[in-house]
Structures are given as C-alpha cells and as structure tokens.
Amino acid sequence: YAALDVFTCGSDLDPTAIVQAVSESLEAHRCDTQSIDRGDGSVPPSGVTSRPQGAMKRSVWFTNRQDNIALSLRHAGVLFAEQSAYQKVEVVESYGYGKILLLDNQVAFTERDEFVYHEMISHVPALRHPDPRRILIIGGGDGGACREFLKHESIEDITVVEIDPTVTEAAREHFPRMATSLDDSRVTLIHGDGRAFLESPSDAFDIVVVDSLDTAGETPFDDRFFHLIKAVISSDGLCVTQICAPTLSPDRFSSSITSQRSTFQSVVPYLAFLPTYSTGMLSFSLASVGTRQQARDVILNDLRYLNSDVLNAAFALPAFVQNLIE
Ligand code: SAM
Image 1: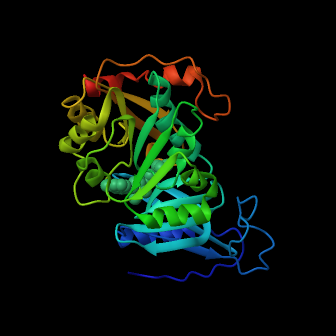
Image 2 (image 1 turned 120 degrees about the horizontal axis):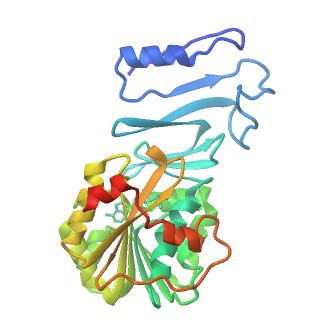
Image 3 (image 1 turned 180 degrees about the vertical axis):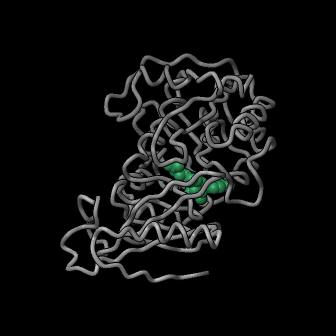
C-alpha cells in the first residue's frame, strides 16, 4: 500500500499525470485518488458543473477494473461502506451518475442509468411470456427488477431471493425508488442463497430472473444451477440471465449461451447499452423450455429505455456476436 500527498498550486497543473506515473511504476492493482480543493471550495473542481448534495468538498476517482479494461467515475465521497459476509458493499455519490452501488469494487448500478438494466431484464421476458403471473428473482435485493415487474397487472407474486441483507440495507437507505418495491404486497423477499432456494421444492414460476453475473454464494451458477431452474419453471416458462458482454469477454459470452443450451430448448441473447458497464454493452440470455415466445402487443407507456422498436432490435445481433454463438 502506498499513499502519496501531492500539493499543487495554480489550476493549470494536472496532478492526475503524477498519479498515472506512480500507478504504472508501482504496477498498482487499484489506485484511488482524492483531491481536496484548498481554496474556499465555492468553485467546484474543473469540469464539474455542480456539487452533489451532502457530499464533502472532495473529488475522488473510483476505477472499476474488469478484465483488461477500466471505467473511472468521479465521486465526492463514500456514503455507505460495509464488509458483509459475502462482499464489500459501498455507496458513493458521483458527480455525473448520481449514487452508485459498488460490490467488491465493481459497479453494480448507478442512479442515472440503472433503468436500462432493470427494464431490459424484466420487461423483455414479461412481454415475451403469454401470461406471466409468478416471478422468481435470484439476486436483485436492491429491488430494481422487482419494481419493473410490478408494472405488469397480470403478475400476482414475485419472490426475490437475495443472499446479502446488506445490499437490501444499502438500497433501502440510498436507493428508495428501487427498494420500496420490496414492500409491495405481491412481493416475498427472502435473504438466502438462490441456489439453495432452487433445491427446495416450490410451485412453478412463469419467469425466473438471474439478476447476478456471478454468485456471491458457495456454488457457481453452473449447468446444475440451470437444471434446477428448469425444474421450477412452467411448461411455457422463461429464464432470463445477465451474462458477460461479448465486447468484454467473447469466450465467456459464448460459453454462457452454449452451457444453457444444454438445458433449455431455446436460448437467445439480447443486448442493451449503457455507459457504466465496462465496454458500455449489456448482455442477457432469454431461455425457454418450449419454443421461443412471440412478444405480446402490450406496451407499457412509462418506460424510459424499452419500446416496441427496442424490444425487437435488442435481439438483432452484430455479426461478430452471431459468430460467437453459431
Ligand atoms: N440489479 C443490479 C444491477 O443493476 O445490475 C445489481 C445486481 S448485483 C450485480 C447481484 C446481486 O445478486 C447482489 O445483490 C448479490 O448479493 C446477489 N447475489 C449474488 N449471488 C447470489 C446468490 N447465490 N443467491 C442470491 N443472491 C445472490
């Protein structure tokens, strides 16, 4: 661990060049910077248009490293930090993307663009199912996916199985527009391992959502995991899973699709785009026990990302992605 204090005078010297040089020379795995304006603080750091409410007068860069690419976001300080039994859970207040939930130093979502992810992981399967009534969400203890499913009148009950109560605690405190959905009368929130929940018998679900790229539990989301999902979904049921983007890890993307195809009759990927996921691309897989459903012509008017054009276009894959799954 190395800490370096750099005092600079005047606004034309850029201390980040020093940070870059030190980080490279030490071959740092992670490098966090924190700049404190020694002036009266009335003028926000260059390039910042406004200060988030409640944050100290600081300007810190958080860097999310994933495979061989990094995403840096400027923030004004940490609002919540706990080491749970499963992961490090933090909330920071960023200058450009609102509050951000970090899990083990990875961006889980930001206030500014979480709607993209939660609309696409919920409404795509809900609109492709003939009559969705019972939903199972594995992960998603932040309430984001649950909030979106509640917009469908046909849905009678949603079971959310979240392994880490600290995620729900952080969401209730800092992301109430998501977490309050967990209190709806149609919702049952269980704090436990989604894999263990699947091992215990339950009534069939119409849609199962795997709202987590990797498990924070003991056992991986492997073939057996998807076999357990297949055992609890109805004959026209659907399983939607967030999978690794082909722009981030092509091998992992194709192996996700291939392994699910050993369990389900039809598995198709679909894509969405938002800046705060490394490479800006989001990927999901939609798996069905029977043949793939056609979209119902139900349009939800108050969505911010999904519309009927996007619903169709999301399944249109670039040539390099098609080649990965043929
Ligand atoms: N919904 C958010 C989004 O916008 O991406 C974040 C989901 S977060 C990346 C993954 C969630 O799944 C976390 O809340 C994590 O605690 C939970 N999780 C991980 N493994 C799990 C498991 N085996 N069973 C239940 N929940 C799990």
